[in-house]
Each structure stands twice: as C-alpha cells, then as structure tokens.
Image 1 (tube, rainbow, N blue to C red):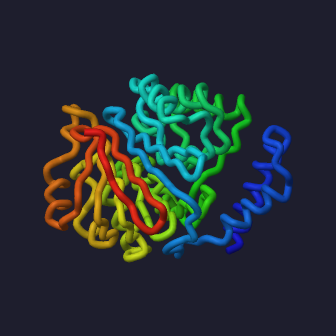
Image 2 (cartoon, rainbow, N blue to C red):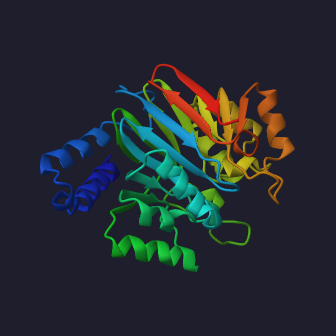
Length: 308
C-alpha cells in the first residue's frame, strides 16, 4: 500500500505541469488519482460507463493496439519503424486527434518503433513503459523526444494500475522490481514485458507484450486464476515460446488475438501455439489473415469482428 501511495504522489507531481496546458484544475487531477487508487491487482470488474472499442491494427510484424474509451483514445504498443507511416495514416482515418495514454510493453522495435511518428502526429498526455534502457538510437530518440516535449512518463511494475477513465482500468501483473535475466545474465527484454489486464465492466483482456514461458511461469505462480480474462492478446506474436499450456489454463480465455505479419520470416504464429489454442477451444483471430481486429463492448456484452 505504501508503494502504491508513493506512485500516486509521483503521478500528481507529473500531472501538475499539465494543468496550465490543459486547463485542468487541481481538483480534477486529484480526482483522477483517487479513481486509480480505488482499483487494485485484485480487481475483477468495474462500473463501466458508455462504450469501449479495442482495435488490433493490421501493421505487419509488430504490435499496435488502439483503445477508444468514450471519446478518448489510448494505445498499447506502437508497431515497428518500417510501418510508422501506415500506422499514423490508420489512426487519422479512425478519427484520432490525440492520445490519452501510450503504454510501451518493452523496448523492442516492433513494439515501440512507431512511437516517434505517432507522437509527432498526435499530442500524448502520458507515457508508460517498463523502465528498461537499451543502448540504441531508437531508444535514445524515444527518451529525447519525451524530455524535449515534457511528456509525463511513468514506469509500470507489478501492482500498479492505469486509469483510462469511464470505468476502464489497466491492472499490471508484471514486470517486477527484480528484473528477469536471460541465460547469459543479461536483461531479458521479452520476459520483462509489461503484462496487464484491461478491465471494463465484466469485459477483460490480458495484454502480454512478448512475454515468454519464463515470465508466464512466474505469473502463474503469483497470480494463477487472477490472470483470468475473456480475451488474450497472445504473447510474442504467437511464438511457440509463449502461450504455454499451463498459462492458458490460468487465463482461460474465450478468444485469442494474434498480431503478426503475413508471410513473416519468423513463421509466426507457430503451429504449436495454434494447436494449444485449438485444443482449449479458444477462438483464434489473427491480423495476418483477417486484417484489423475490432472488439466492441459496453462492459456487459462484447463482439469481435475482423476486416476480412
């Protein structure tokens, strides 16, 4: 609880500079922080207000998910560098003029590569990431742009909650304070992915970044049935190294969404992953063969449709 209280104080400090720009009052900021504090990692459902739409964009080999809650837009991951013009064009076509929240699950190019183009095209109110620095030009540009434009930025860890407003929250299960390392003793970017559950009323969707079996095992050990979600954003584009049988048993999703490029060089999604999903009678939706995927929900019921 003390850690969460410290987080809200940090958020207040980050949001105060926005008051002059946005015209929000101190009371508005305090109310938003109090609303976020009312949710926890144990949250199962919320009081949904209005409507929410989730779009898994068809942007090739990468992740870019647009969320529309009420009339506000947010994103989880921003696709790859090579598809940035396509991503910006899609967002404009869909009516985006600004983004409330952008969550970068981990600093790989196919998840954060579109950030610079997106932030040049649309104002962003708040950035969230896993806090891991990587030594490459893409990441350095990411940090410089955030600093130059004074965009509030927060690091997400297990136990944190991001409030999207209107009864929509993102509850964070991973990463942890102690970082996960690979077999060579280096930071494992995939297995430090932000893993969190988007909850809106009775609807829930688990986002996994590129989490692999190592991260999944720890999530199962610590959370088990709390991972339950109606929809699963399949980890690592459907790689065989993710979506283990035990993980699927904990999440128990009705549907699974996979973002991958048509005829990509990795062979994603792998047959082993598809078989595991099929054996558990989980409906599979994939951008490489179906195009953009759209989830529409009022918090009580939800429908999934595809572009083709």
